[in-house]
Amino acid sequence: MADALRQTGGFLADITQHLAGIFRHMLPGVLVVGAAQLAYPEWFRTLDFKSWHHLIVLAVVTLAIGNTWFALNRYGLHQLVDYFLYLTKSNGPARTSRWFNYLDDLGLYAYKSLHTDDRSARAREHVAFRASTVLLILTLGELAILFGALHSNSSVFVDYSNPMIFTGVAVFTVGVWQMIITRHIDYYVVNPPKGSA
Image 1 (cartoon, rainbow, N blue to C red):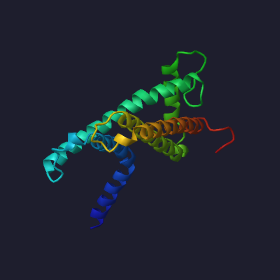
Image 2 (image 1 turned 30 degrees about the vertical axis):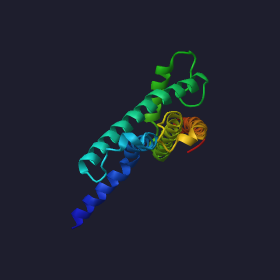
Image 3 (image 1 turned 120 degrees about the vertical axis):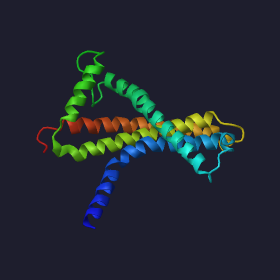
Image 4 (image 1 turned 60 degrees about the horizontal axis):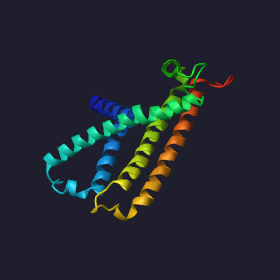
């Protein structure tokens, strides 16, 4: 009995520890597929929500879309904004002396970040959580812009194109602002002010 409780506790601890990663990769897919269903309802008319086969295929497609959307955001858009901030010498992986030394400066910053004192583990977790949240905010903004501009005539978005695009731009701007804030927090986690402990 005690072993079973320990195993259950270990299983729950594992799930909790990896919950951010699960949501980071799955939630974008759920949002994209959900928004696509609202924007193009005719694409989903043949889907039978009572069929396990249909639900499994939908889950696989949703997971694939979520991972793809996350990867494109994280290693495409997010990296471009990061590079722009680097060029402006924003805190975080900031430009050193040369203009086009981004890869070396980023690599050195990542090395330093990964070798910070174990006492800052909570702060690193906070930065990782904020970074995941930034990607979610960017995804919401992108989806509002995308499906505000592109949708079928039978969509619930038909009469709300302009407000959706405006809201998407506002949400996307909030995401970029939060990215800047997260970079600054990360900078001070990696480079604590002198005299702090």
